[in-house]
Length: 145
Image (cartoon, rainbow, N blue to C red):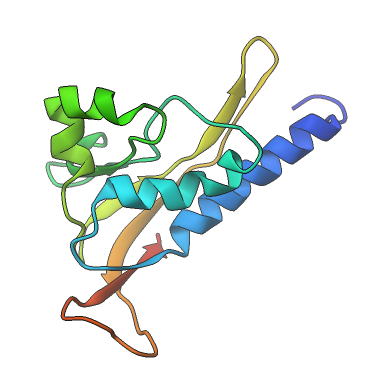
């Protein structure tokens, strides 16, 4: 960025940072699909009526590549009818998360012709310690790499 950010740029950056932190700090039961985690990540942006047109996360490292499955976090930029028609989206965004999976965390916001913001990091899914452990599924969280 060159110069002093505007109030709008600062607010949008703050929302993207909050989205990034929301995903990185999520605790969820094993088997949760990426579609559900995407809503957690996008919530800070959605509160201001902001969104981004790409997935929040992709798998990495299974075959020493970057953008790979079997899982991803996304779907919040399109309607459910788009997801229903896309075999790829259903396969990737409904894949259950398990410990040991490696994913990216990369929410963003882009104002056409003016500015764009994207914050990226990499995460691994690890067991989470919770106070109560309700249900039969183990609890998971992300650890930043």
